Length: 124
Image (cartoon, rainbow, N blue to C red; front, side, top):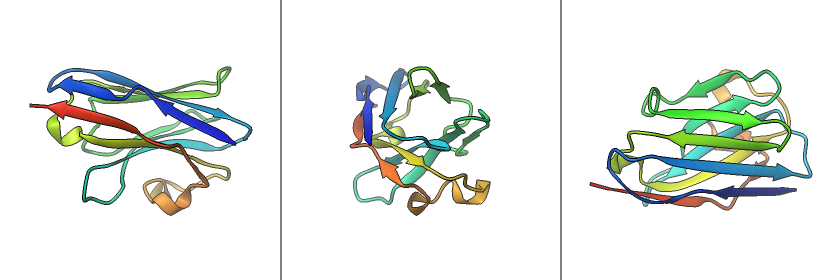
């Protein structure tokens, strides 16, 4: 199994970044993005059910971030617009092999595989 996240960087507040997460060697049900700011717990950002295409966002990013997928490339994306300093952190993509009910999508231990993380820094 390989899970490669990329696309992080340094951006000014109000700017945009697009993260990618390429998966290989696995069939999975859901791809989810989490983030972790220094000293904080890992926080749910957005999830997409790979076959159904249904999407879920945290309230903190709703309206600013968009999660999407390319089935042929087995790659997920997180388009982040109107970035704020509080969006700063390491962003991780995670996969679950089995389906998860909505209430469990935001729980890190619901996931079977994790990417290495990509740093996003938003300056004020």
